[in-house]
Length: 139
Ligand SMILES: [Zn+2]
Ligand SMILES: [Zn+2]
Image (tube, rainbow, N blue to C red; front, side, top):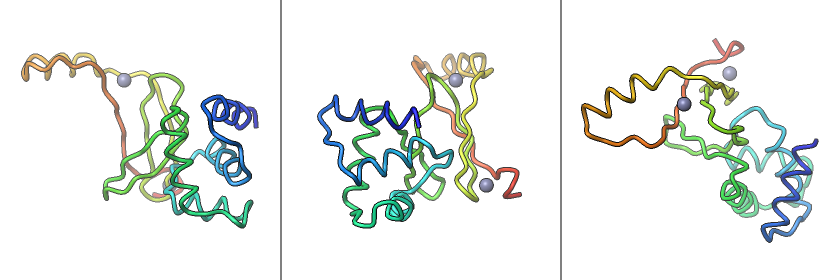
């Protein structure tokens, strides 16, 4: 639960009021290893806080994403999901079946990036890698 308290502190620091619904959403996102759609967050958080509103879910997720606490994850179907942010530079593997998300670090992309940078004339400043597939339970 350490993350939950840290997130709530930051939220308050940045001018967000800590309400019951917000606390439920923060608790959920800080402790989930799955990427969740706003509607899914709504359903799960409502179990803890029955008077939850969907608009509150959208706004809180947006706020958490501005604070860098959650990341917006793009799905192949174009939908957005949210996931707690990585610690520093990490890459993401995400299960298309159940949404399970695993961050991993270390990459051998520098040679590849250098090559396409040379070919295209682009000065590459950063990258974000997201792998889609099926987790152990889903294949
Ligand atoms: Zn899965
Ligand atoms: Zn990298």
